[in-house]
Length: 488
Image (cartoon, rainbow, N blue to C red; front, side, top):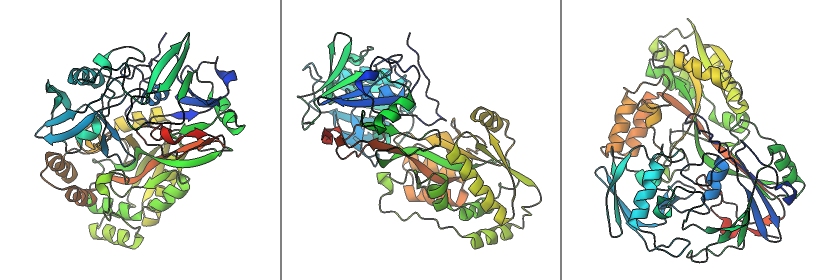
């Protein structure tokens, strides 16, 4: 029986890609979002969840979603800076609530050409899928398609919408496990065994790893142990549970699109004054939060956008801690900040966030605030946010590839207590409409501060001495550089 595990918008995606020996190939992983890999005679073994599907439009476990990026290409792929890179698309142009895409000359694994009807059918499946519905929420339909041109209709303008066109293109949009795609690897079946073999028709793809075997996932502890003893080779963990344990393997950091922030309750009598919010922003020591609370597994954020985003390249966005100026701003408001206790909510089950909240509570205390730090379970935190009885909370949201802030500042699903009628929301709407530049929005945001950016989380990638390669994995594809991987 197939079990679909819903990916909640307010939760960060949990992925692990790791390694186990062939002895574990008979074990099933019913709910794990862990992917396993091993090397046996030059064959790389990657795990998948057998209780989920191997159809990117119906599967929901992160392990399977990552694996399927090896089989299916999108119109665009995303590089490590979230810049859309033409893949099946040859070019794309954003117009007034439209995106016009020209399809290049590509073939599916069975040799048939990719057509605009395949793109249309795949889009319609992706639009209602668990994995891609959120990023395609602003896409109304395929308005026209003819020859090698597809025109997408948008509900509202979005200058960065090309980044959302990374959904998989499947022949005919087929609703089946491992249906025909045009990715880097092609499925091959041998009895009950599933293999992925390098797509020889894929231009420019000449990997050392020619064959991948898909195997079931064992429990996470066994995976980590297997990696440490050298039976397995590769492990990816997005650290969504807020903890990190060192393992006996090479480890590198990888940025992901999970935004951690401090949010104000717009109905709070104290934080209704933007000068008070600016003071809090200046009092926060982001460097300590990243290096200590997150143990280095994050990058400082001075804007609500991912600091790796190509749109922000070469822009000076640093906000330095300045307690003296923060105190002066509070003094200007003539607000008695010690007149009542303020409540800060945090998920007690996530150590990274809990320590962040403790840092912030201490820093606010030095300014003169009386802080009641409420440490709640994830379930109770959601209930408390819904009730609105708080002043501040630590939040996290995985942004879509176009860095859409609608869920936070335009009254979307993650906007607990955040007003959608503010200077920031008005300016953001102008940005999407093309009526202002991104720095205009950022400057307005830094004055208004409905939320305070803290950091963007990292994932960790670990691999044993049996493997070598660049391991420059991307948030959108942990196998982005698999063409550089090989076995010693």
